[in-house]
Length: 180
Length: 209
Image (cartoon, rainbow over all chains, first blue to last red):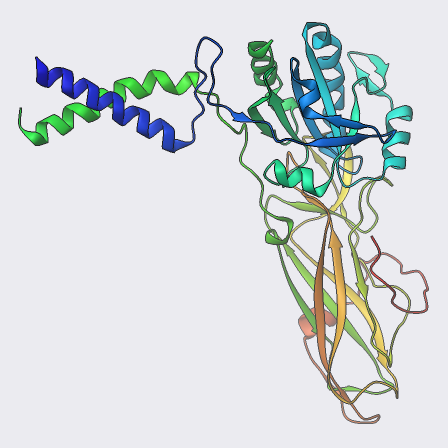
């Protein structure tokens, strides 16, 4: 009997070690988590005001790195507008971080470019900030655009999505709802 | 229980612990990270004559091979907001360029992120050509002409940041009248009929943004 208990204990320890070294993040019930903390970064918005990620704690955030020059980034904007419409009242916000763009270009883009969202024409309806190389580095470097990070209410990175979101929209919504 | 048998039991039980743990563990990434922009192309430069006599026009070429699954915007992309591919020589003293570099025509292709609007892109192997002349001020002997290749590439779901790659066109400058042997005919013997019509410009400049 003691040998059986020892075997089970050894298996449990081995499993924990495998999970720890495999890079898997395990959501722990009761609010605890082993997810990675969001980087301590502060963006500038288009008026030059500071917007720190920490200031958004308490909300679920989808941080979307995008560029006006990036066709897949433009393609997914209707999805992002729709998410902001549907979930902002439930403690969610999108934050668009314009990358390798000029403020003037971004400002003009967000005020003039209409997107077809469910048959209606709509402008971008979520806050836009300017990304920098330093901030990108703190997120591990951004090799593919768009790249989005789903950040929990307590400021932990839940998942990273590289590439256009439309093929994985259902999964994204599922992930998002799991955090609201 | 023998030690070997005990290990088997530990592994078997570990599998039972790990299988239910997998679905509750959110993956860090929903997709694999793409490579660096510089890793998706290979580049090579060529000249049409060896040596290049002073006063005789010659051609230089930059051949870019783009990895399968990737494309880059052409020199005349479909929309003004897309970043065009450019090659910009920084001509040393004694070299002039006739007009602008010659850019191949792109191909119109649709992508999952642009299903209705074809984008004008380069894929596979593309060759950019420049008509150059070394004049009396060009130093005799081995010379290098720096060229900056700038492009912005994407795959089927994501785009890589725009990048500039510095290259060198290497050549030998000889005295005027010296016999010049045509080289690299596989690059230069074809007439560039599938190239954009170059606009006239006096010479090369800075690579810009």
